Image (cartoon, rainbow, N blue to C red):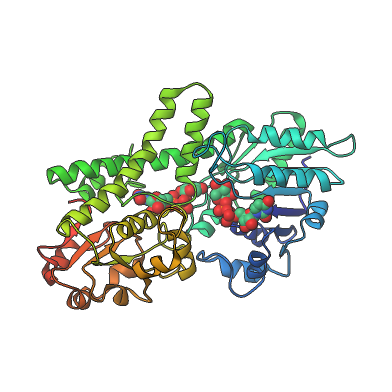
Length: 466
Ligand code: UDX
Ligand code: UDX
């Protein structure tokens, strides 16, 4: 018989830990779920009417279970002490300095969370690695936990990577393609694995719950993201060829996607992928390959990231070239700042790179995004080395409250995020209020080119790729 999980604690109330554990509480009313974070403001927000992250469907689930079997707190010790299963969902950013800087994941938070569990625990626990980590991190966690266990306390470690995508997190969690649970293939490991299987089995069909060994599970997460990102870089590489030859990338993508062996998903050409995972996970894979003395494999995956950078640069130079080789003091309206629609998350968003480049070229940038806050935009753009003084930045960048405000008197309008509302704008109105000649650059290929040409953008309309 597997141990029955009655109390779950989640360390890290971020984009992953928050929605994942809220859904567990929603589906398992007899399990007490506590989500813990060191960040007091974040916990206060989780306990308020305005949750700290925007995710369609999340409010309803949190409001329904909060105060019943779902709670948010900063009290780490108490929560760890009481839990039988602990998710480690803290962030794992790419290292900024030291060994593996720019590639390897910074595991300091994972390690401190693990040490905290070891210090506090007075009974046996199942510790679940939820954060995306380089392969074999579970091993280090296990070493720390084992060094601190005795005959009365044992720690079993599992890897249960998240496959949720932001913007569709709740749906992904309620109806996952698969849930992956890796564990050590020892009798105790298998028993722990089974305990977590039983939690998910409350709402996920058992043929979708995959159990593997620890390392397969850890590597599968990196591999899945690398394969997804690789499709985008492949289609974006082809977009450059389309632009040079007159082929239409959307048509090419459709024709290829109709091959059932290839499939239609993740073949949308864009201004480049963003988000907290793709680049970080691929760089992890690159670092791992190098560590394993597999330089060709490392170079292969590295190219997926390089191509993404190239795509952003290519887009910027296309804009400058079209605007008669200079954008000095020209007004550029940026529509969308999040890394994709239906999220307020800006981590690694292509819009950041684009805006920084436009600022360097002395353009006046006016940004509108339906979900990203003004503070966040300035924070993302004011990283050291780009524009140092806040005053200087404010001279170059303004934030608009609507797409119409952003495009007033603008020389060019750029779609950087594929928000649905951008498809429904009154483009006639926008055309009339823009500086002529008026240019549109559709970095997400969501607009109807023909319609825009008829409005008057005719000779100046410019898709990213055709
Ligand atoms: C996730 C995954 O966990 C990460 O591995 C993945 O690669 C990116 O996405 P995410 O939930 O998006 O992370 O990160 P974030 O929103 O930053 O949440 C992490 C939370 O952990 C933060 O709220 C932070 O305050 C908290 N934290 C961090 C702790 O509570 N304790 C710590 O020691 C460190
Ligand atoms: C991703 C994975 O999809 C998810 O399984 C994993 O757990 C975390 O990382 P996420 O980063 O939230 O999720 O977003 P995703 O929908 O994968 O999009 C990533 C980026 O690729 C976005 O910037 C998106 O706009 C871009 N993209 C996606 C394209 O440019 N073209 C496409 O066809 C698809």
